[in-house]
Length: 124
Image 1: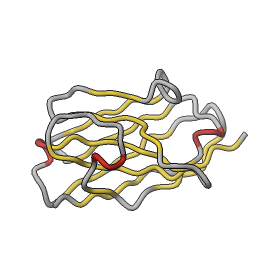
Image 2: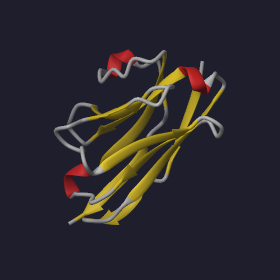
Image 3: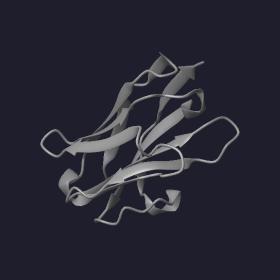
Image 4: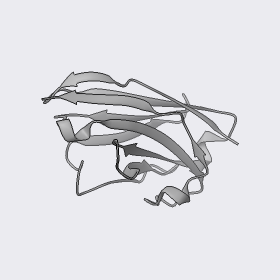
């Protein structure tokens, strides 16, 4: 069972950037696919991006493609989400998630382990 801890959230003006980090422990990080989801008040949790252990990645094309980039450092057991050109509609709690294997699923139910979330607020 892997434990996940997110960090890096905060308040940023529209057009700004943030980099979220998710540190993993307690599992074999290099065998997991890591994902980022977000949940705004009153909305469903939404897939943002995922990266497989072999380096393949996927992002949500409808909302963040071209602005957000996922990366991982297997030596540091950490996955990152670089967020550029932030918009007020990006305001949400951002969650890190992990699943065994290399499938980059976008469904929330496809992930077995979750972090506690980090708040990102983008002011207009």
